Structure formats: structure tokens, C-alpha cells
Image 1 (cartoon, protein in one colour):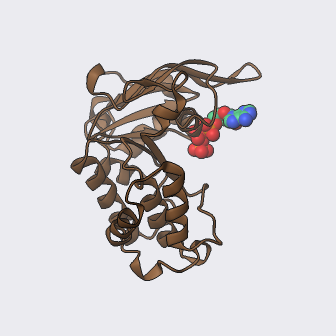
Image 2 (cartoon, helix red, strand yellow):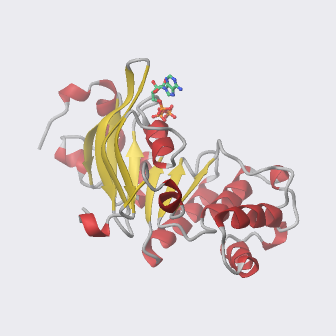
Length: 251
Ligand SMILES: Nc1ncnc2c1ncn2[C@@H]1O[C@H](COP(=O)(O)OP(=O)(O)OP(=O)(O)O)[C@@H](O)[C@H]1O
């Protein structure tokens, strides 16, 4: 686990309640540099609520979030400058071309040498031939590549990905996973990734956090956790945590 000084994301005792009901209930975790952490849990567990609080879109009921040591509540802009995000439910404006979209977001983020940065991302995400195509007419896989290129424009230290490979074919999903792994391995950034695909999680994530009813019930290496809890696969463990968290065998 990352030490305090090298932590990309630190979440402490974070909670969010709606009318007295806890969506997220005193969760604490960290993401370190070069680390991909999977946030898993059944529908309604609190994953998107957690991501939205880290993105500064939702205000926590209590708790603290630090990005690269910067307190999100106190220095919001400085904390969020180092963050970016991609999710299928947050598509880019469909009437702008791929280059227009990247330029628009690049200007918002204050990216230096914006034209060079865009060209390098078009190449990295194999998007050159779509440069002047309106984003809205691209296929899901192509739109995901544009969304990831946008998410990497400002070379974030923290990349939040909410089901980045949902609705992609297996070959495109594999390609996207490779690019995200590359992002984590090459720079000094960390990734918080939500997915319902256990095969993908085992392949990509260094560590997983299992959420249920707003709490983090388990965390560890996705390749070792099932055995540690007497289960054959991560999927079997997931189903147990989701259905009957209290019956889980502890190591
Ligand atoms: N604005 C809101 N008002 C009331 N309840 C909410 C609100 N937003 C979320 N919730 C509730 O908080 C809980 C957590 O929701 P959240 O969207 O974070 O779950 P999730 O783990 O992302 O689920 P999924 O896998 O289905 O996307 C759910 O019970 C949801 O109904």
C-alpha cells in the first residue's frame, strides 16, 4: 500500500447520506502511483457516489479526500487539476468533431502546446482517421477511445474510470485495458477503476476494494483474495460479498 507521502488519492472516513440513508458509509482507502485499484460491488453499493465525491461533483456528508496531498474541500481547483475521468454515461459533445472536442477540453484544462498534445493523443489512441468526424456518430469503442484521449489531455495524476470497457467488444476492450495499464506503468499516475467484469479486474487491477451497502468489506490482490476467503474465483467471492457479506470466511 502507498505511504502517505507518495499517495495519489487518499480517502478518509468518507460518507454520503441521502435523507438519513447512507449511500457511502465511512470508507477509507488509498491509490498509490503506478497503481490500478478496482472498485467493485453490486448495483447500488456506492461506487459511483464515491467517484463523484472524488471528482468534486458531489459534496461529502463527512470525511476527507486528498489528491496528491491536496485537500479537495479546501483547494478544489488545485486538487482537480491533477484529476481526470471517463465513463460511458458522460459522453463528449456529439456535435463536435474529435479534434474540436480535444481542443475544447484542452483549453478548459489549460493544456500547454495543445496542438502537439492532441496530435500525440490521436496517434496513441489510433484516432487520426476520425479527427474530423463528429464524435456522436462514432461507434461505442471509438467513442471510448476519444473519451480516454480526453481524460489523458492534462496528464492527470489520478484517473477515474467508471466501467471504461462496458459495451466494448472483447478485442477493443483488451486494447483499452492495455492503454490504461500503460498509463499507470509509464508515468506516476494512479487509476481508480470500476467494473462488473471480474476477468478484467483480475487482469488489470493491482488491488481491489469490495463495496457493499456503502462500506468497503474487503480489499486485497484480486488474484489472491478468492483463495484467502475460501472461494474458487473472484466472481464467486463477489457473489458471496454481494449476497451474504456476513458469512464470508476470514483468513
Ligand atoms: N441523489 C440521490 N438521492 C437518493 N439516493 C441516491 C442518490 N444517488 C444515489 N443514491 C443511492 O445511493 C446508493 C448508491 O448508489 P451508487 O450509484 O453510488 O451505486 P453504484 O455502486 O454506483 O451502483 P451501479 O453499479 O448500479 O452503478 C443507491 O442505493 C442509490 O439509490
